[in-house]
Length: 123
Image (cartoon, rainbow, N blue to C red; front, side, top):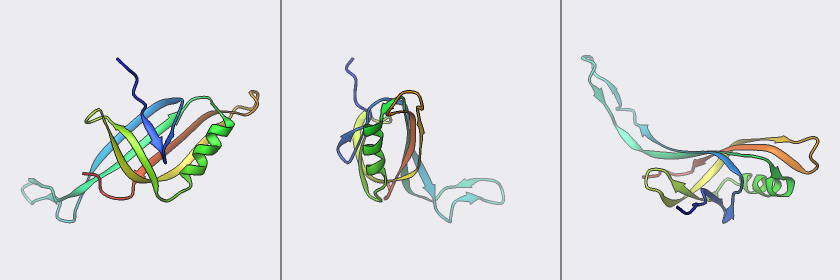
């Protein structure tokens, strides 16, 4: 079976992914909730995508390129959708990327963690 790349951000292939989770969560409206007899009603507005990624040891210039892209408020994201095993494309922003530098390895980072969240509903 051939390897499928998991993630592209603004056309850049994200390397060294050691952890990847694409969550497509339903967002409930104000009419969602339980009735007095405890029956559940759901008023689903749509779904939001969030993609959590962790990179393993990566060269500094690659991490800096990714961090530069992640600063944008409208990132074009192409990701391998785990529900379909096909690529989906969405517009996202990034929540608080975290990085850890390897002190003894020159210009390398031990890890880079970030979460991408869709700017619009994903249905």
